[in-house]
Image (cartoon, rainbow, N blue to C red; front, top):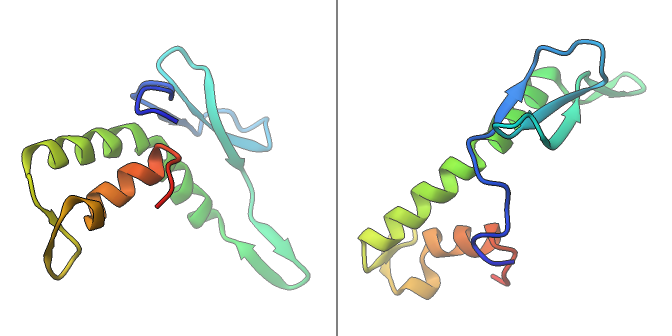
Length: 107
């Protein structure tokens, strides 16, 4: 997938529709980009996904276009990479790894 084959941002989380079993992440035209369940997932007496995690996941998905842009700008600005501990070449840079993952490229 190339860098331009995704729905442009901004994306927003729609928490306003309590009649549906999903929380929708929408683009500016209110097209649905993704949906997450709108209730906790419980198996027996164990909570598999708590509602707080569901909300956080929805916010993270909605932030994806902004994070992608921030990462590509950071990569364009800095000619060397950083893996959290060391300066590395761009092939091993955590920024490049995240960009490749977002593009659907092999790590």
